Image (cartoon, rainbow, N blue to C red; front, side, top):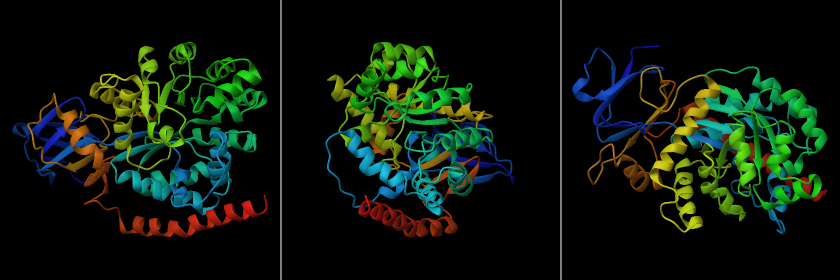
Length: 436
């Protein structure tokens, strides 16, 4: 590393401390931060942050990088229930994602998220190519674009089960401060008893990453076929280890919530996707009542995590008919929970401008039109920046990954090349339809 960098003359906010005129000193980790009155220049690389707000990078708690190539895809189908969306849209797309298309979907998703201030992704992958697919994603997103990532393959009875298990287990054995693995499972409705027993035999203490009760169909399937609810079924198989990511959880009940709390699971909410699919709204009140840790994802729908922050805020107000049902303090809590989760899984510390934390940060131009301080900084973010959030510069592990709103020329070229691979995925899907 060269000499340390110092962002000076900026507003500094890490969701805990605020400096109206402050500095952050860092190399790959934070060295110090504070008010400018305490800053002394010791031949640092100076970055003038005047007229800007410096924040930690954001974490996306659940996404589907493969959905990148759904943008603009003119795929039509008859809709009766949520299963039609899965079978005719997402499963049709993901099984035709093969070869270099996996890499290029990762490039596009990584760049798009980076441009919205995201420095860590938690991905739930599926593709027609299974062996080596997680490494292809990691190479694209972490090694090439530079984001931290937690990756998992979506084990499902629609795939070859042993290949899914081997891919998850193999990838989890090679982690670093920049990447790690979880054990991916699709959903109860696509996992047989034999599959769950086979997974349990290999899982040990690894956390799973699974969709739960995204629609009422998942609960209906579990009750009709197994005489129990989804979380109860997973728990009977001993699959809910600490740090399991339970995604959606729209239709869990009180007993299921108690189980998730007892097992130290985390719930990932994805409000925009839930509204888009017409399945319902997250039950944040139930999760908060049981003190279940919550993180926020985008389910592969876009790359602006700040849109999700806004939608969970407003959707919960509507669902509960109460403007205090989700507060800015709740939002700070779910953002911080994501930092804590990634820190545990990767063995690092992110999300604060304190000595020893990784230097994952972003510089966002902002001139506050009203007074700003530690008490109201979150309000400035939410009502002033989140609706059109665009950082100017993003650093990950102390390295600049977005500079003056742009990625490197090489990344821009790879991004452009993705269009050809997307067309190939669409062509394969169309030919599949012709022969179905």
